[in-house]
Amino acid sequence: MDSALHGRMTVMPTHATLWQNTHQQSGPGPILVKVGAGNPVDIANDEPRFDQALVNRPFGDAVGAVVADLGNETVGMVIDGQPVTPTVTDVPGSSDKLVMYTPDPPFEPKSTHTAGLVYAGTTNYWTFTVSDYVSVPQGTAVPADKVDLSTPGFHVKVTQASAARPGGNTVAAAEAQLAGTPENVALPGPEPDGAYIVPGCINWNVTMNPGGTPSEIGNFQTLLTGQKDDPVPGIPGTGLSGNARFENITAEICAYLELPAGYQKFGVNGDDGWKVQIGTPGKTDGLVLFSRDRGAGARDIPFAFITSEPGLYPIRLVWYQGSGGGNLEFFTYGPNNTKILVNDRSNPNAVKAYARALPEVEPSVSIKLLANGKVQVTFDGVLQKSSSLAPADWTDLHGATSPYEITPEGSEMYFRARR
Ligand SMILES: [Ca+2]
Ligand SMILES: [Ca+2]
Image 1 (cartoon, protein in one colour):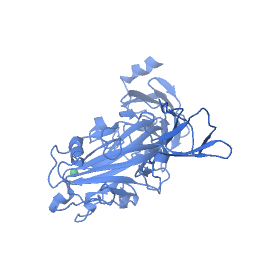
Image 2 (image 1 turned 135 degrees about the vertical axis):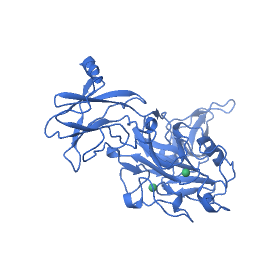
Image 3 (image 1 turned 135 degrees about the horizontal axis):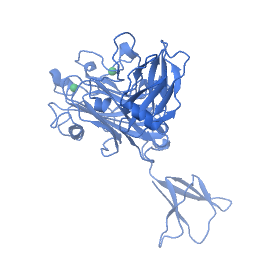
Image 4 (image 1 turned 180 degrees about the horizontal axis):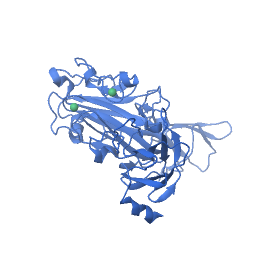
């Protein structure tokens, strides 16, 4: 069967005669149905005009198509020559069916596959290459007791230059600007480090800033989702006039994102470019999840990564705006690849963001002799014990929780705590 399938790929039929495979998945978004006559045979899920090599690749967690006029007939599916079992569901508002297969584990990054739909006595093929993605190492998530769960949102540092940054619209130039070159004129926020806490979502648009002519943009705007574009904090900076008020901006947006284990589907719609990585404020060397040097208008660019365990992941998004329009939306692809702003607390499917870690607690120890002859050790940090100080043999007391009780042994016993 395998060789027969591949043999037929060279005469790949684009349509069956009886039923029509109206839309083969070729992009990362929802599998769409185009209604009406004159539709192109190959309909992409994202704007095909823009950099198809980068953007127009499906996520690796699902592959499918929309089939018209299926009625009560059956449809089969093959992936790389092997029969698989798809789910078949109704497409709302039409008589079409969504035929979807969910590979487990997801397809490998940048891997190329051939999918086939079997119906009407024929098999209809298409090939696709999965988008690139990375796996985040185990242990990257921060324990919940280290994160300030009472402060939802993002820790945002904004910098603005009075003239174009050297290096232009690149991530490297944006990092240099965050580090102080060229000089920052943006208005500092109320946090001790000059940052702002943005408690809601990132749905920025420089036309909403003071002096701008509001013109909403992107997936999330008042008329589309009821989510009004927000101004960029701290903009315009001091001493600026004209277009310079809304230009030469770089922002560092950090949060701890509450993620499950698995295949994480994110997207940014922005103008001009951005980088997303594992990181905290000022930490520039963490694993890069997506990076793009870009001087261009608002576009969706999806990216994905794998988490091996649920947890709170420190995420650092660096966004830069050169000249002209400037916007930023930070979202995930939820059920059926619906776009959802990160930290939209009105949406149960939104990924929650927390703006900061809890302050580090200094390690401490106090020791008390109890009436029953035991010793009670109250501590913060990781408790360590030694039977001598000359020489010391400090060892962690794994699993010890405060207050910790122990029966004295030997002639000496010492305790201390470390971070
Ligand atoms: Ca928007
Ligand atoms: Ca721009």
